[in-house]
Length: 291
Image (cartoon, rainbow, N blue to C red; front, side):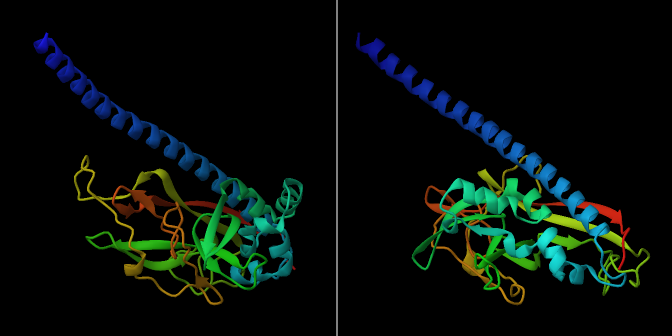
């Protein structure tokens, strides 16, 4: 009887080990499927938004020699097509769903096209909770916007062997496609490039995994590598654009948490980065209307 009891306990232990191994593989497959689905959905949304932006800019009455930056600063364009100051909505200003929906319906067409990608989160800043609906990326303080915030996207150009990031540029959500680094892009008819009079736009989106963590690639195709530890204090980055400041929340975790929006995930005894990939969608329309 004692022999059978010991054998039964051994069999039960083996089943638990097998279950743990199978569960781990199942979780990875499930997490990968969910995050891949999110990535494909995001790519479709920003591609549609890029087409809307290029098409609307191509038929907007603007001076022939105006630059892309000047076009975005135009009051009519920011009111009707795209306003970077409305990438963050303060939910505390809207007491019910009807008033929030009315605010979303009043957004410029590109902001409204990007609305399905906006995330709802409660962030704690200086001990004060703020409920925000915002485009993914780094949350930057901007006193000129209705919410007091805007969003920019850090471009990670290098990563130390320890995983600490180097950011070389703050990407806007909507920017002009340029070849090289000319002084002006093709939007203006007086541009010096090979093409003039084009509404050539790019929309950037920082996809960061909700279920998958980031790992350093050591060159082996099937090697997971070293997990990337979240260390915002050691990140090297240029100053954010004029008029904005980085905002670090008091939240220990979040897909886009931290002063650079690179995210924090709690993993047992350490805080790690989520899987990250900046997606970009482009569209080009020839300008049809001039002032």
